[in-house]
Length: 123
Image (cartoon, rainbow, N blue to C red; front, side, top):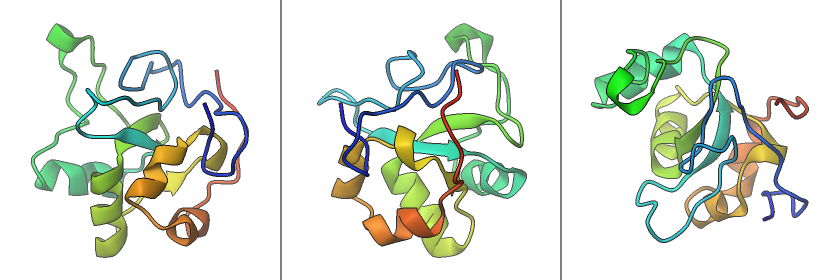
């Protein structure tokens, strides 16, 4: 698996456990209709934006073992949602090394680079 920089995909987060496959990585396949490929460090502004668009990422949902996100958590965000937030001025910072190359199917590399969190891997 490669990231948007063309190197090996790094882990996004194991606390909380993220990813379409809930393995910590922003991996994807044909069943992932949301393309959960953008590794982000979410902030309150993005969480409020996402909630205003009908996707509440802050409220825990025990049925899905979802703890709810808070400012500073790392999470694999859907590429289209990140792009929408970017265009509206609410995009969270991106962990480039943990962002799957398939994010480039939806988002320009320059936009992702402009929002780089410039941080290393997190287990």
